[in-house]
Length: 450
Image (cartoon, rainbow, N blue to C red):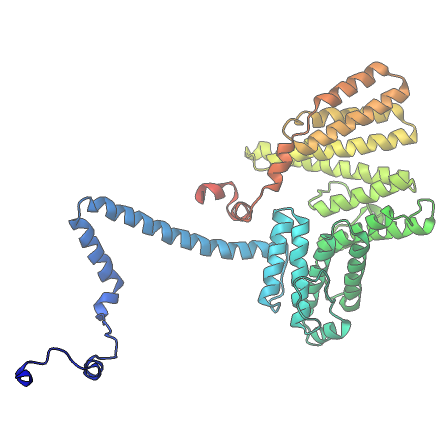
C-alpha cells in the first residue's frame, strides 16, 4: 500500500542532479546601452512624475555643471603646464616623476613662496634623476642624493643632448638656492653645478638658465661676504666678491643686450629702462658691496645715480603714455617707481653723501625719500618699510647735527607709520589657479572663471 503513495521528496542525489550549477545571466539588448535612448527614457519618466519638470531642469543644470567643470579642469591642466614652462624649461626626456617633482617645486617656490617645501620636491627630483641614470637607488627618507658624474653627463653630451644637461644644472641651482640656513651646503652644490656649466658651455651652447646663474653668482658673493673668513681690508677677499657680482651683471648684459656706459660695469647708459628685476638687484648688490666695505664709495654713488636716472626716465615715459592713451594699465608700475624704488635709491644716495661729508645734501635726499614713500605707507608694505628706515636715518643725521627738534619730529613720524602686515600676507596667499588665470586672462580671469 505504501508503494502506491506518490514520492513527496527527492533524494539528495536527485536534488543535486536537477539543480543547474550555472548562474543565470541577464542579457541587455543593444538599445539599453544607447545613451540618447536612455536620456529620453529618463526624461519621459521624470515628466510622468509629479514635479518632473523641475527635476528634469535640475538634472540638466547638474549635467551642464559637471561637463563644464570637467572641461575647465582639462583646460586648466594644460594652461598650468604652459605657465610653469615659462618659469622653468623642463627637458622632455626627464622621467614623468622628475617632471612632477620639479613642477611641484616650482609651485611651492614661485607661487606659494615656501622655499622649504620646494627644496623637498627638488630633492625628490634629484633622487629620481640619479635613479633613472642608475647612479643611485631612490630612497625617499634619505636627506642626500648623488650628483650625476661627468662620465654619465658625457654620454648626453656625445648625443648632443645639452638640453638635458642644462635642465639638470637648473635643478641643482634651484635645490641649492632653496636650501635655507645652510650656507656650506648651498655653496657646495652651487659650485658643483657651476663646474658642470664650465665643462659643457661653449659660445654656441649655453648651459643653465642665465637668470638662475645670475642669482647663483649673487648668492655666492653674499655667502662669502657673510662668512667668518671674509676680511673687508683684505684685497683678495674683496676682489673675489666683486668678481662674482660683476659676473652676475656681465651675464645679464650679454643676454639682454645691455651695454654699460663707457664699458664701466654697473653704470647704465642714458635714457635706459630697467626692465629686469635681476638687473636692478645685481646693481644694488654691487653698490652696497662698495659701500659696506668702503672699497669704492664713488663707484657706489655713480651706480646709484645711474639707477635713479633710469627709474626717473621710465617713470616720465609711462606718465606720458598714460596721458596720451588715457589708460591705467601701467598704474601699478608707476606707483612702484614713485613710492618704492625711487625713494629707496634716494635714501641710499643720502647715506653715501653723508659719509662723504655732504651733510645738507644727504639730509635733503633722505627727507625726500621718507616723505615720498610715506604717502602710501598705510597700504603698501614696501613703501612703509622704506619710509620708516628713511626717517630713522634722518633722525640719526639730525641728532649728529644737533637739531633736536627735527630729530624729535622724525621719531614721531617713525612711530606713526605702521607696517601693513596684511599686504605681505596677501602677497603670500597666491594659488596656482589665481596666478594662471591672471597670466592668461588678466584681471578678467576671476570674472570668467569665478
